[in-house]
Image (cartoon, rainbow, N blue to C red; front, side):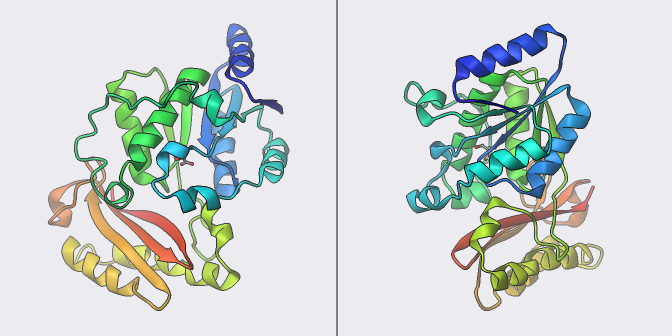
Length: 281
Ligand code: PAF
């Protein structure tokens, strides 16, 4: 696997491959890679001739200095994992390489998409995500971009950005990878104790149980029930919201839309965990 630290070197590599007619699949990450990321690599390898990953802990999407500082950075293990799984190239840039000038905000109209859920609890987060993904897409110029369903609001916003800015890249969304017990795989899980990882299965259990209630209840009632479930000792739920999967806006009745998604964020052992489940599609 090639590891490139500069924009110039990565661009030369991609351009040479494109000249040979190869298609490029790109997966942006912040590292601390796990099986979830490897499932994105697998889809990339199945779809594109060349699979490029990036590892960049993007400072502009953190609204909490501590969270940025504590973000895990096991770079040697990450490189080994990518190599073992057949990634072709890794882009590993510095902050100066990604933002040679002061990061400029993007001129995007996200409407209400970034006002709810993560947007409400992490102000400025999605402006930072859109900014870095746009910059990385400008550098890599991939045919396909691979993202996980776990960050439901994130991929919805990136799809909106791609549409609005007419970026010629196809977004491919890959399903959530879970441990046997149901915990959604996340880079943040390494910060949980073993006990915490076991307890955290409450999140997926609550989502699964919520799915069984949609024929006999209302979104509001299910949300209230779920918030109570997620208030178990040690847990601090931020939100459990049932939304229209197209607009990310809360719904009044399950029949309001053909695409219903439940999204949640919960604190456990000082770690913020998110998860979601498509209740109807
Ligand atoms: O989901 C992530 O890991 C990040 O938000 C992303 C898309 C790599 C942008 O920094």
